[in-house]
Length: 90
Image (cartoon, rainbow, N blue to C red; front, side):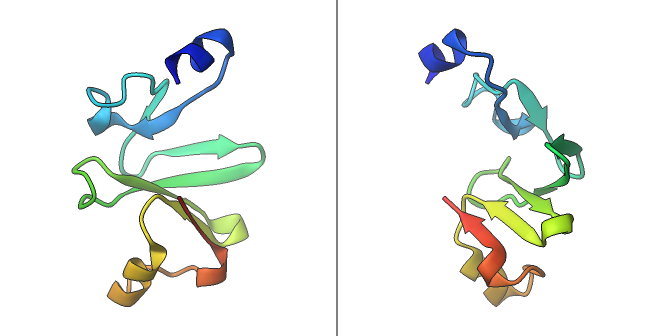
């Protein structure tokens, strides 16, 4: 990954609290941060659990949550407001 990032100008968004574990983050983010992805407003939400610095991204304009944890757990816990069909996980 570092070689790819060095050869191209690729922004990497990630949790500020995980910089020591993910040193190639170029845009460190924390809870309630906001940024633009093309024309979309992206809201950053802290969801400690998977890791203490774990974050997810929510795009209200397209009713989509982007997370690296299964959204079904969020839905079951009542945290997920977006429809599961709009939930993107890795």
